[in-house]
Image (cartoon, rainbow, N blue to C red; front, side, top):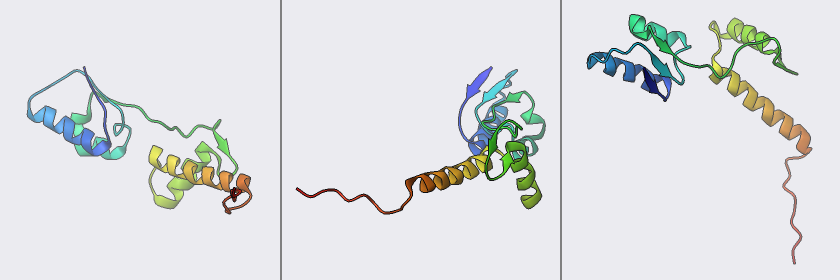
Length: 117
């Protein structure tokens, strides 16, 4: 088994290098990239035995006030863009939602003034 961490492009290059060096392991354990369609289509059979994780799944139990559930977000995203969202899309939406909540809770964009001595 080979454990490796990095982003998708680097993961693709890593596996290609291992294959070109005739390093054939029974399992590649990678952090990101593996769940994406691009990873599988780029590597084809060389993607076999590569396992990774996803940091987001479109589950019904994850809810927000804008999309409803994570599954609803995934459907809305796919309907608009034509492909399933990955964790980058989910994270981007969550980031914007976090800013929206923070701005609402702050009540103002004005910085507090410090008392002068």
